[in-house]
Amino acid sequence: MDKELRSRQWFGRKGKDGFIYRAWMKNQGIPAHELQGKPVIGICNTWSELTPCNAHFRELAESVKHGIYEAGGFPVEFPVMSLGETLIKPTAMLYRNLVSMDVEESIRANPLDGVVLLCGCDKTTPALIMGAASVNLPTIVVSGGPMLTGKYRGQDISTSDVWRFSEAYRSGVMSDEELFVAEACMTRSRGHCAVMGTASTMACMVESLGLSLPENAAIPAADSRRKVLAHLSGSRIVDMVNEDLKLSDILTRQAFENAITVNAAIGGSTNFVIHLLAIAARIGVDLGMDDFNNIKNIPLLANLQPSGKYFMEDFYYAGGLPALMKELHAVLHRDSITVSGKPIEENYLRSECFNRDMIATMDKPFNLLAGIVVVKGNLCENGAVLKPSAASPALMNHTGRAVVFENIEDYKAKIDDPNLDVDETSVLVLKNVGPKGYPGMPEVGNMSIPKKLLEKGVTDMVRISDGRMSGTGFGTVVLHVSPEAAIGGTLAIVQNGDIIHLDVAAGLLQVELTEDEIIRRKGELQPFENLTSRGYVWLYQTHVEQAHLGADMVFLKGGSGTGVLRDSH
Ligand code: FES
Ligand code: MG
Image (cartoon, rainbow, N blue to C red; front, side, top):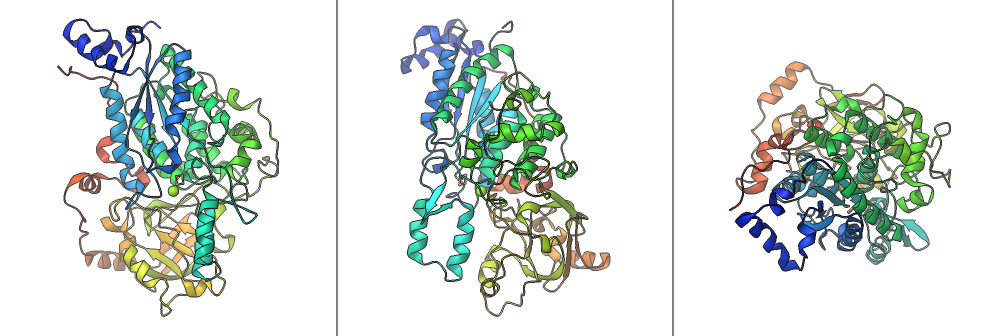
């Protein structure tokens, strides 16, 4: 350690300033030696009882602290706004950027030398990494871990079953009582959703980017080894400070490419695209929609719901992400540096696979279709995304008549109307659920199938929107249409009966309208009116970027480093 610790600008001061910076810390019973030159490590905690997936984080933070003390650091835990996917209205995504601001300013403004990010429920991971990236201190991530697999009447269940249960309920197969019993069976332990939904996708992203110690992605929240990982991460961050190993040393273009490769093989959520784009823009790595197309033809290796059959718990017992990354060795950038300070290959080369039905080999994958397909065309000039492993092969090249819903209220009012003019070949189009339009781009893109078609046994239809889909969802669903309807994208002018053509292999999404007709209809569009005129939501609606850029606020891109120009007294 040759450079003076950043925290010395507070605790190392003489006179009045040093007195103020140290004295109030001492009211917590901190002995003087803790503030005399030890690396000060912030533990950024998204604990909240309103974020049930992260409700065990105070306990996890204790394990991190043990590790920090052991390595000679001084831990300070601080809260930031937390985002619980299930309770927050209108959608947790609306607040991802707000949390990132909270995180960024909390880190920069305080006497911290390094940071541990405690991430779990979906948005808590990208929000914390985005904020930390704009400061760029030595940073390590500890994820909260997935729940244990749910058990319901002899079946293994988890979040993907919410969609199945709800369809069963709507078609009368499942009763109110059965649904009520199932909810407690599904979420029977601490942790985040136990399938390859967005939270697990984000935990895998963290590990494949090199931002965590190995095995972070899959150790169940209830498994004592999760605490061991937290302890070891606490020790490691102190060394990272001593080595001055910063986020920007780890988050290189190669690291992002590794994360994209791994995301394909695990069948990760479409939300991965939007969050990775936003993180890249914060750290200054040039990444675009086209980088997500699966040009290396990575197949699906993880047999995990919603694309496959197993749960995160099984993934861990089968060898976890290291065992899967070992299969990808030939296509990964193996020398990307991770938080360990060593090449990423050292995280996985010694791992073993204990269940080939869970983690497949490159020679015998579960599905040749994997990753994300970016489609473009006159309906989405800047792109839209689809997850082929969760889609129906028969619908991947499909032409159908549009059945249009102008907004979510219109959709809810009409979808189960027996008179709705729709059949299984129709294409459901939902407008105004984009970043600006909803606002906040909610996970409503996997619209339920009309009840009358469900009753006929239809299980999938082509669905298109400017919204997102839960990582636990499935179907032939085109999401993140950019530009969105609310800013006058072509999606806004689609009408009932227009012919829409989706060709996933060709990367195409077209509405069969002449250029003149599109211009004519756009000329008749009424300007979109924001629902709010003040506060954070106004700030968001007036500054949010489109989905193909990561839906960050334009003024938050990039970073401002660690410097604070003025003292507080
Ligand atoms: Fe928190 Fe699914 S609701 S991860
Ligand atoms: Mg979600």
